[in-house]
Image: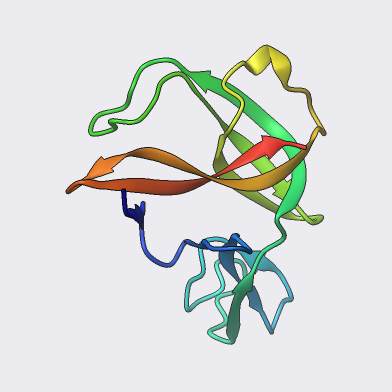
Amino acid sequence: MASVPVHDGLFAGGADPHLIGATCRTCGRQHFPSTATCPYCGSRDVEPGALPTVGRLWAWTTVTAAPPGYSGPVPYGFGVVELGESLRVVTRIAEPDAAALRAGQKMHLVLEEVGERDGQAVVSWAFAPS
């Protein structure tokens, strides 16, 4: 089955999957998703680019009831992963059992099927324990 991203411009797939964020040339901070304006200082001098694919688990929970419009598997993990020293990304967590996770745990980016649209698998990013 062919696949499509959950939303264009959030991540790149293929052999080297990564989130697409941006770095502000004025204040030096990274943000996700990539936008034309830095959300921290308001500068329009931002450069889109690949974000780190490894990070540390910062917060997490298990989603046990499907949100409206979601047709993917339940339960699934959901939380926050810190990439680098200051960028925290709200993300799916590939491990649905919250008891199997711990604060500071090393995580790596993976791509997961999260449903189907028009006969194609919908793919999104998640972070899985390393």
